[in-house]
Amino acid sequence: FFQMIRRPPRSTQSRSSAASDVYKRQEQQVEQLKKDFEDIQQEHHKNLAIRKEYGEENRKFQIRIEELTTKIEILKVENKTLHLELSKLKQREEGKEQNIKQQMISSRSKELLKLSNIFNSIPNSAKASTMKNTKNFSSDDMPSRN
Image 1 (cartoon, rainbow, N blue to C red):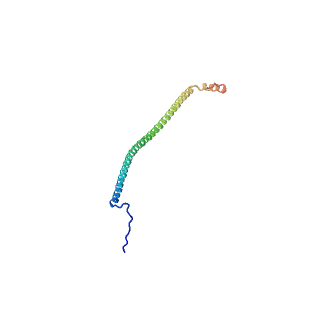
Image 2 (spheres, rainbow, N blue to C red; image 1 turned 60 degrees about the horizontal axis):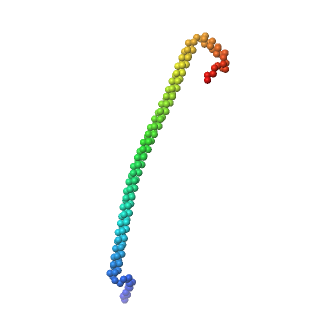
């Protein structure tokens, strides 16, 4: 009735020997796991140190970028101020030129007024004889102004 199930033979017949092999393998596995865990921890600490270093470098770059951005904004404002001052100087120079031109015109006007007064003070008879004499000259007889 009962059939016996036959098991394959063990590599070693001693029970204690088989158990000690299992324990030895477990100890080796535990030692390997400990070593792997230590390696992972060391790698993790290295990564943290690198992150910290890069984080500090990144903060330094951020600060430098903010400083440069501020300097750029200051330079833009200074540039606008200089352009305004330049345009004011140009306007002043143009105004000075206009004043000089007006002074020259005024001076010439005064000279013309003096000459006109002198001319008006000359008697008409003297003017008429001078005009007759000038009509007798051709443009070739006139002295050149150069």
